[in-house]
Length: 395
Image 1 (cartoon, rainbow, N blue to C red):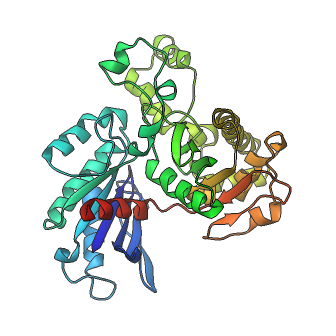
Image 2 (tube, rainbow, N blue to C red):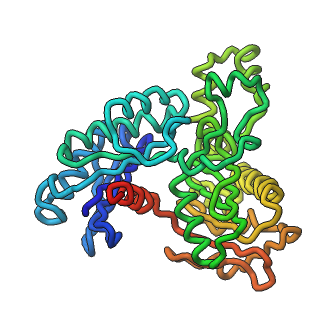
């Protein structure tokens, strides 16, 4: 069975065509910088790989390019769109209604649309990906895998906010959690590696968006992203945790509108707001060259992660392993080192030589004396989505 997985982000589309149940990747790639200058597509099929610069006006253009490459005479892996048996879509916010993988119909799409305000950078792009894929692969059933679904096990004492009850019961204002497919995938890998089903693990997903999860015996009990994907850790353009008084002050005393404040906190803050760069590689390079602002931003980033590690270790009543994943978590030895430094009270000691090694495989980076395993596990959200879609179809 050929399952095409589409991960349609705010300015990018990641994709994989996966043959199931073998989990063999027939083709994969990413369309980047959609709607802005400097766009490109990276495509890989077997030993064939290339990157092409191109301007993609919108997600529709990006998906049509993906479709044409999959059937290309030189680079393609299928002859016709009918060879795609199912399409799995990552959708960031499923609210309280969607807690399982589900086949898409008009009602599902309408409910995804109703959740736009809770994930304004993601759900609109996710829905666009669905609507275009329905046209391109019209014979294939389409499925949603929701980021929020993995966190359905979080207990009420963790997901409810300390505001009047009716906001939760009537308006469904509560913690939902995000990056669920990534946290689920790497936590399963960690449990298998440790051979410890009864375990206490903290997963740390660090990319342009960042989140952490406390996972006990394979199920999350808390996570850093909440009602929307904006709080918690410092991110590429998002502020993360901030005193709500700042929001009121910006509106009442500085004259910013609600939409302007929302735009600042989601698109102009985080590492971008602190340094002028949103790409951590640029920030690390500037810090290494003596830029004090960039150095401080990295210290702030690591400090925020450390605070969550301490909180989640307390919530779990112990800790077996830390797991770093996603683009930054897998590739930034600098940030991993900064996070794990001076954490000996928890029994965390890093092996700097192991940490400095580059690898795309699951690996240990802790020192011999560390009582907590520190693992780097490459995430594969697309494979996790394919697994869930395949399991649903087979059932």
